[in-house]
Image (cartoon, rainbow over all chains, first blue to last red; front, side, top):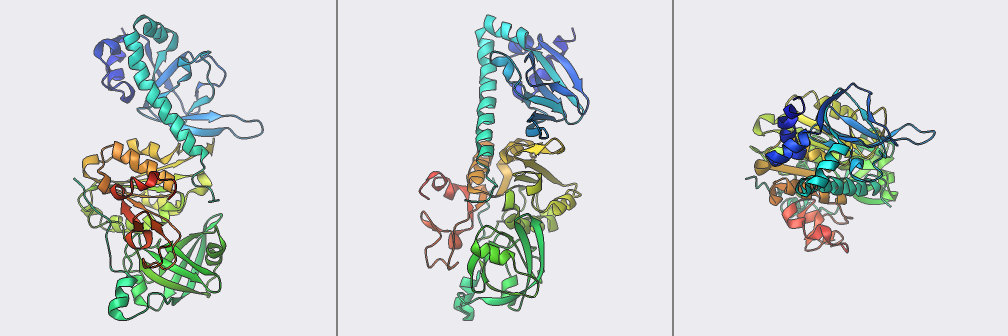
Length: 155
Length: 293
């Protein structure tokens, strides 16, 4: 019952806006509400990517660790963003840490559950791809810009 | 629909034909203050005898002459309202900028100007305003921000989005903190990367656009920073629904005369010193993707 109750929140979330109600219902069957305090980790690098998160409130830092250095933040995500793409790509393992910078309220979507539903209903799978591929493309483009070191000293 | 276009203001070049002064001859100015902004960036305040030099509009630039070294185009970064001094923020990246950034109080510098087009702060009245600054791009935008804040009631929602390489690369941090006390000014700052101590945004500056509060159909955008950043920021603003002629970029090219005579700053059909530096995206869009330019 609680899972069905998340349907309206999923439908309102920027990432799933305009998703057909039938698909929203399918997605909400894999959803649960989660909450993280400041400093809590949503997930750690190397762990199984068993879920992804729709951020409803608060900000999340995506970080990479390097020996002898402080963890480096390469992206922050906030309200309306999705955190976690590795659940789509075998071997379904996180490639970075995700840490709550403040109180974070999110919807967690179970990866195994959702992958199963996408296999069973390719239309749902295509709808999800239409949302995740632009997010991936944007992430890739932004990474290119960060690599260009735009604000560095001109050559 | 916002249709503010870059403002053409009387410049020293125009004054030359009426007042008889030669815009190629610098006026002397004295450095009265110098402060370090970033590791390689300094701000100098100049006391000038020629009051015409103080009659600049936000976004315009001066040609600063370091005696014996050379001249460079530097945007004014101080307040245009009732200015008694000229303020310039200079990044030490070459021989001339090094000489200018190294000027100590009491030393003399040559100044020609003001030159070029201005941010359309008056034409933007009544619209929402989105200001996007990348790195040192906040310096040429600062006079426009001063103007907008001094006339806040004339504008709709105002958002300032700043991007920097890292936390230590954020220009004017004290000023940004002070501006944050304005409850009717949205300020978002992002850095390309940060250590775990930073609690602000991390990511490219275009990523802040969806977080800014504005009506795309009635917005004027002012953008200044590295050219690639401006290109993607303008594209993102246009994708969000902002009219291309309401998006204004401050272009940068090497300039020599500042008067549209020598052609050193030619950019396609434009001369940046005369037709710019502030130009609307609809005029620049095609040129921004031509790699030979």
